[in-house]
Length: 423
Image 1 (cartoon, rainbow, N blue to C red):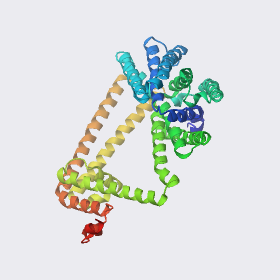
Image 2: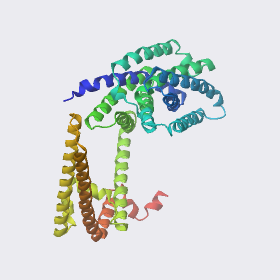
Image 3: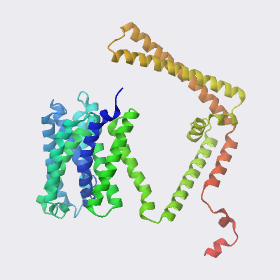
Image 4: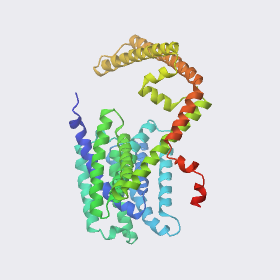
């Protein structure tokens, strides 16, 4: 049995280091209004790693890091000039061009490379779960040195410096991004940069408070993403990116209540929920009336939550057929899972099946899959026929619920002279 804390602790330490430096740089990036500069530099670093990969260098080698850093420093020179160009063309547009060109170049390079798809997945999502104390020992001195440099040059890093200081900012930022992309991938590095900083800027005015809020949010979200990836066996990088997106959404929902008129925010929130519910009900009603045999997501979710709802429109024969098909489908699924577990257990224990046994298992799995699909077809056909029979009555009921849920003041609409009184 794997101890989750012992397994996730090294990756969490790496995430703390990434949050610490990227939350700071994210605040500076937001102040400069160059939101996607991190994506551009990260993609440039990934392009350098791709070139090294095509030349035969291992993904985690010093040579690959050197290629990524060289490409990133060249991009830093180009980005230092974009502020001057920004007087005619928005700087963000030029940064976007750098990003898409770097991404397209990387795709062109790995198009015909063996394991090119795996390399592309690696540079996008990284593999932070396998990182540990060695990575911490490598990035902590580097990030500390860059943090000290920015503290000593804090006036020059404010965004109003000359061309040389622009290069110093982008070069130091590029060094951080190059090191981070090798560990966490392009998408997660962007999340580390923007989301904690955005929440910090949202709820605080001073730089110190923004950084502290960013660190707290980044730490909690990183821990939650790592825990979710372990508990549900999800790709770690993608799970953490979604976690950061959820954190930003929650912060956005809480902002009107914490920093604005709470009563007004509550009224707007309730009205929005009611309108959303009404639109979903009305859309489901129209879909059921127009295409009763098509998928009905709302009705399907309701029946999964409360299977007894089928009794409202299934006949006794339909209920019997549906339940029997469901039982058989579940039985075939469990048999297939049993065979998969048996094969996996033998493989992990080093006891491999012979060719005849593998062929038999594959044949059984195929048969179980086909039989399960057949039972699911029966279930779908029974459900479709029942819904087709009651589509008009159920559609009218859903429309009535939609009208009742919508935050419409019906009394004002029907009161005589209300329109003239308002005019």
